[in-house]
Image (cartoon, rainbow, N blue to C red; front, side, top):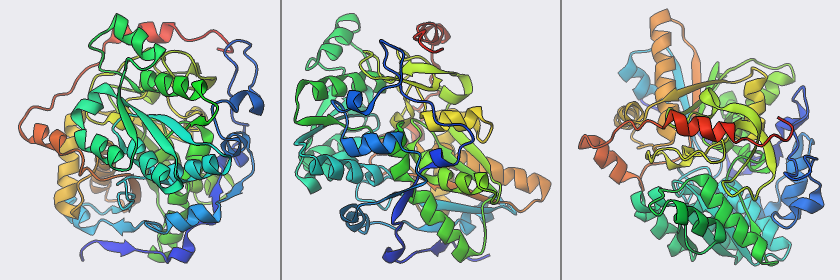
Length: 454
C-alpha cells in the first residue's frame, strides 16, 4: 500500500456558488422567532444586528447562491483545500476501509472558519459598516474574523470565552496581530458581562455569555454589526465550499463516500462538508451514512432537547429551534473550546430530527489519543475539535476490519492544532482529565427553556 494520496483541484475550480440545503429538505426550515411575540422575525427586525445580504441568505430557499468575485479572489489563497486518502492511517489500523479527509487547516487562520469570515466581512464593508463584534470559543473564529477585518479595513472586537482566553494565549496573540481587540468573557465592559460576574466572579465563561456581550456591543452603535461563526443558516451556507470541492475531488479519486463524519459544536464545519452530499441524496443521488460527533461533556445532540431557545445567555438574540442544553448551561472547561456551545445549528438539528444524521459523543482523553495516532500516521496534528471526527472515523474503520467490508469514510479535518500545544502537553503529562458536567445544572437549564412555540 502506498503512502497518502492527495487530490488537488485547480483554483479555477473553486465553487462559484454556495449550496443551500433548505431548497431540498422535505420540510421548510424553522423560522427564527421574536421572543416577545412568538412570531417569525422579519428582515427589518434583524437589521440592527446583521448585514442585509446575510439576512437575505439566512431566509433564502434558493438552491444556489452566487459567491461574490472579491470573496472568491481571497479564497484563492488557500482554496481549493486538499482531499487526502489516508493510506498510512489505513495501514496502521490494518483496515479494509478507504479513509479520506478534507483538510481545512491550510487556511491562513488554520481552520475552516475564514470561509464565512471573509464573506461576512465583505458584505459588511459593502453596506458601509465600520466595526464588527463577535464571540469566540477556542479562538479559531476570532482569528478568522480578525484576518477578514484586516483585509476589508474593519475594526473587530472579539469576546473570547474566559477559559479559552487563559488556555490559548497564542490565539489571542493571533487576533491582536491583525488589529482585533480580544476581551476575556464575561467582562466588565458590558451589562451582560457585569451581571454574570456579580453572580459568579470566577466564571469560566461560555459561548452563550460571550454572544450576549458581542450582541450588546453591536446594538449600541449604528456603524457596528454582529457576525456569527456558526449556527445560523447563512454561516453553514458559506461553508459548503468544502463539500462542493470534496464532491469534485471524489470524482478524481473515482470513489464516493459511504460514510461522512464531522465534529459538531455549532454546526458550520459539519454542514460545510455534509450538506452538499446530503443534498445530492435528497435529489435522488447516492445515499450516505452521516455521523455528527460531539463532546460527551457538552452533549447537545445526544442529550439536548429539540426546542426553541435563545442563542445567548442574556436572552438578547431571537429564538431558534435547535437541539439545546438550555441557554444557561455552562459546560466544563475542556480543551475543544469550539464545541462548548449549548445549542446546535437549526439546519443540523432539523436533519437529525428527520433521521438523516446520527449523533455520537466522545470524552476528550480518547479524542486526544486518537488525534496523536492520526498525527503519527498522517503527519498533521489536529485541533482538539477535529479530534472528535478523527476518533469516529477510526472507529468506523475498525468496524470495517471486523466485518471485512471496504467502505469509503470521509471526515473533515477542520483545523490544525498548532495553537493548542498546551492541551497536547497536558495530555502527554497525564494532566488532561475527562470532566463531567453537572446533571442538575443541565436539568435546570432545560427547565428554563422559553415556553414560546415549544
